[in-house]
Image (cartoon, rainbow, N blue to C red; front, side):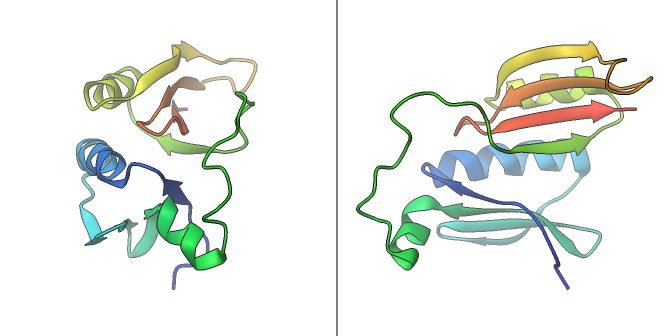
Length: 134
């Protein structure tokens, strides 16, 4: 049973689905478990690890379709996806090859953990992703 997992509500479903399909295949060897118009999900060890849902579809479902689609001013991030990887530099390269933009390049983070190395990137929707190894 899927107990808790992230579901990203995205404006450009085709672009985000293509991005995550490519990077999750390359980094984790995972293929979509479900891929429907406006919805996709990837399972890891029999549990949903990530799902995408078209933002407009959920807005219709919960009655928020008439509200603005995005904040009018840039704001600090309120969530991020984190992927543990073997090699942060290679993972960051993989994400950028598939369309991610770098927010913070690969670097050691000894203040966060003695052997922690991270990179921060943004997916095609601007969602923050951290790749990490430790």
